[in-house]
Image (cartoon, rainbow, N blue to C red):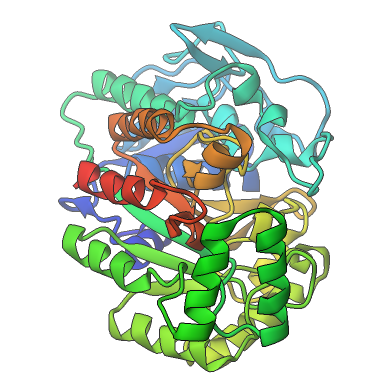
Length: 456
């Protein structure tokens, strides 16, 4: 039976697996059952290995079972794969103590152990990352209140661009295959999802004349003649808006078969939220086109939405009402995200998939994995019903934070693609509507197309 996580991933992106769910079933012996253990086993066995499992604290049942045996106790048991527990999963709450680490061939291993069939407590290590434990600990926020790459332990270990959790899963799978001859794991294929954040539906269209006049003055003050002329051409003569690249993006998605998801900012009355009015006919026209073309779209909750319990729900409900379909996809504007509260607000708003898990200022794998996972709440010590879908890169990390040239960005992106292919993972990119305007970011729309054709 395919578990709910794989069902959701398939429903979301076509991230399907070749062949049937593995016939392999595991029984995991533990000293004490816990929500933490169930949560991480769901990810390890269901999501990563595509197998079924049961957990038991009864050693007699474990020894007599015909299933493949994983022994997660300190005692060795013949005929089982032994993972020596560190005790981390038996705790509650979040501690500030450093996490034990060792390194081997450039890969860090957390909670190292002296005995067992694997050299570290893989369940504790995976839990540490997919629960986002380090984000629950104290850290210095950036100017937008975010957990950025400088806080990440993977960044500090210089392995942010490696999906270490997925690499651990490959090592675990290899160890299980050696222990149990004839075991069969289904093949998972590399997949790619392109996502575009729409902070401004259009650069000029749909905006009040006074606002465009003010924008024209700013263009001249910055000596930005290309945007000034584009603004005049669009506002006065009806020429195509620089951000109106939706037809080209949809066409590319259709040609390559690569799923495309838009996230629309649907608020326009703050310093950081500057799109056209929600409910504007231009929004409705695009929503109708996307539904007709079967292109997915979701909410891009506004800058301050993560600060209040009903901000995300208000905007999500309004988008659902105007688009005439339920909103289940989301990514926070500016990636403003509080791990302790935002997932709760998303869940209350009916969001099922959140695409915020990545960095604005750097490429790489924030949670150490390419695979989707459920958020975990340490206040209640339980998993939430919102699935995080990690992304590997955001365009602004290159042209805003790194001031990188196109070729430099392309080389880094190719590296990330290869790292994701190594583990047959899910590769998600984030571009913005402004990146396709030649007047602002020359060559980036071509890079976007090159990535698609390279992967295809």
